[in-house]
Image 1 (cartoon, helix red, strand yellow):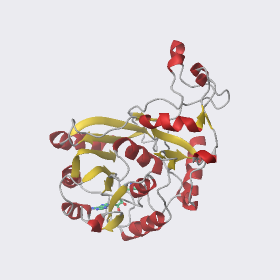
Image 2: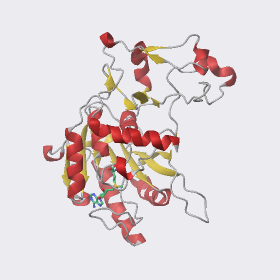
Image 3: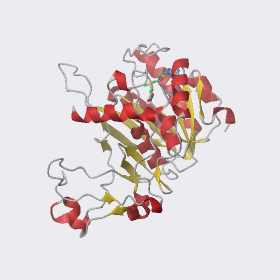
Image 4: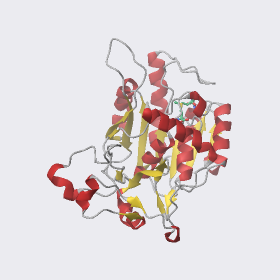
Length: 329
Ligand SMILES: C[S@@+](CC[C@H](N)C(=O)[O-])C[C@H]1O[C@@H](n2cnc3c(N)ncnc32)[C@H](O)[C@@H]1O
């Protein structure tokens, strides 16, 4: 891997830049390209003719797959309309794993169904060698009574303390909406969305590449989780914002030696294989059926190396506040 791209955001057009990256050299590629919806980016005209947009997408998708290692994964985030075309390209050069539906309501379109999800295509470069870790998210509970939303009926004895395994429908991560709480960019993704993708597809030290880095969300998530990153971004101002954000960030999103994703000081994603080690930091109700009405509680024992609050940076606070407001809405 050319050192000149590693752990920085390189300014420029991603297609020629990707051509400088060797075959099979990156563990995961994630792309959140312009959606061709006339968004107001600084440096991109987000309104190409249909075929022009698709031809351009095919170029960078081919490059993404080429640079991904045989053990690696390719993730593409977009509106469903464009993903239907992307699958046609990708099915020829990679292996379909999932269409992740990220539940995120958008503005009413009128005279049609209300669009309520973005898609994240998840492909493996090689189905047999693909690196993947099952992840869990916290049980959803009634805010008033504390009981689990889902009725497990006679299967409560099989409840898992932290929460269920993640499916391909993600309903627990909210979009960053209000302008006053975000960087100066029209469509920044929430960091813990990327942290989830990274936790399930990489190990510490792996390389994550994002060809449309924007204000650096993927790079930030990778850095927080002890991974390496390569960010490519056309716009100088977005590169500058990313660099400022990255300077303030540390690889500290963990409890003890276990990397996890936090939101509002609570874990929102952890790897299934890590729960056994993490469970010693929690009081788990007994018998296990009691999980139905009683949540696990962090022991708050600093002598064990447990940091109850992630070492947040001030720059994160607006995002957390925004996301909390989004939840109330
Ligand atoms: C949807 S945004 C990505 C936002 C990003 N995921 C974030 O959370 O900040 C798409 C980005 O791609 C950039 N872009 C557009 N064309 C590009 C190109 N040819 N090469 C590199 N970046 C490009 C735009 O400037 C914009 O920042």
